[in-house]
Image (cartoon, rainbow, N blue to C red; front, side, top):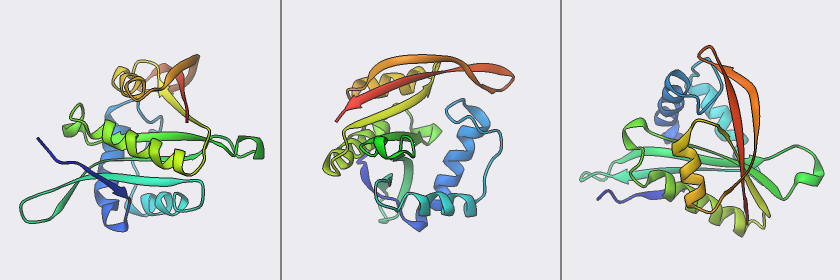
Length: 170
């Protein structure tokens, strides 16, 4: 069994995070972007998740030499940029394609939820592509409830995508 550690994201994680993100862009509908990104983009992304009310976490395992291998990452940030939403956050989670269904997602979500609760957040929202059953199941496993589907609001790979909204009362 792999021992998973979840910690705050650091600059050294950027190459692996970039690769995980780009794999999701190229091969999944988990992210509705068409273009891969470079490490400078992910550095900017990390800077945006180091301000109050946001967080970026990375799941790692340590090999026999003490080197860490990035398994996945998760974030939360503003749900909407209006004052009335200040106690609601939206999450994102990405797991290395070779590590999915191995407990990485659960470890990331558990820590993300704990941090949001500790920060005094009230609700966490997830916006998930409607056919992404793995993400829907992961979110349900950690207590999220489905609260609606917005039909055909995005496109990728030449097809219309539905967005399923889920929420967790923290």
